[in-house]
Length: 213
Image (cartoon, rainbow, N blue to C red; front, side):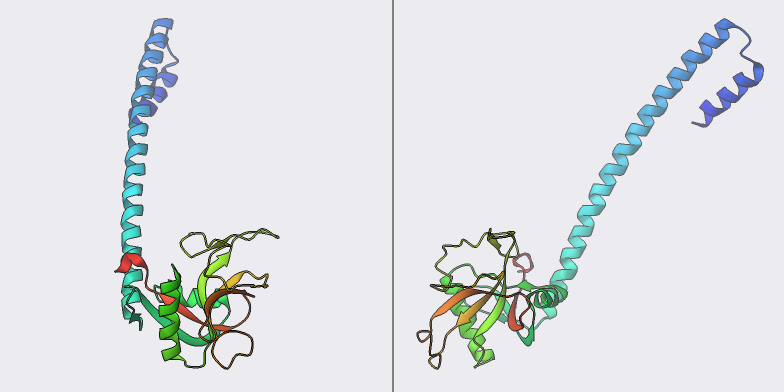
């Protein structure tokens, strides 16, 4: 690039003496422009490649830091091989979700009925009179279209047997629910998911991310 600028200044100063020198200048200029363009393309590729490497490395560092935070959280390993933290301070769904993430965790995902029973059995040990806990499922749809998803984007089907039968709620966040014998409305030890307003307060269950095991 410095050679190109010097050549332009020199020839302009000399007034481009004749037509042949002008042609020579044009050929030299085109040659130098092509070389410069090739170098710029190479530089762009190098920058892109290194940026991708840096992004991957940053992602690894971020994962490591998250898992370090998760390892310092007070968790319980259940027989499904997953580790959970049962949080007793009642919060809205979004606040509960944020608190889990600050600990390197996420709101719990319920994969099947066995998961549901396990977390509620442990929840009952932690807080005997708690009947519900926030989990990560939330409606991502709009209007009347319901599209419940877990934290990782996995769909929670509207016809899933995990839902409470006859659930009439039309809300966007999900709790796990355990009915006790003192309830006048539900059968003893029935366990379900059910919809509830996201702004309501509830205890909640955080889970250690799968990549941290």
